[in-house]
Length: 149
Image 1 (tube, rainbow, N blue to C red):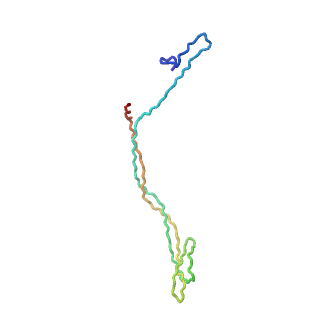
Image 2 (cartoon, one colour):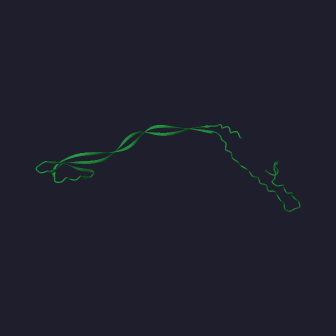
């Protein structure tokens, strides 16, 4: 807005300009803008969620231990029972029996050689997995504003 506009109203009356005075006074005008915001609803959204169950085959590694027992005949007389011992990853367990003779003696009949190994086998399993899906629909009409009281 400038002093030439029809609805210009200065905050203070303009001073009269005196031609004989050496200094002139000019009015300084300031305009102030007031800005406001209003929230306006432009539409609505409807959201729907759907859960789907899908079956997939997954490979599950399973471990199992297998034991191989080998019987080795010895049939040897011993004075004291031998201890369980190891030969690498093989455990050797002595098997004894008593025989009635004029004297009792220990006879090492056989040894059990026990070896343990671990196998990893592929074992397919059916598993149920959930997957969500979201659908939405925008409603363009804004609602009627409530009546002012």
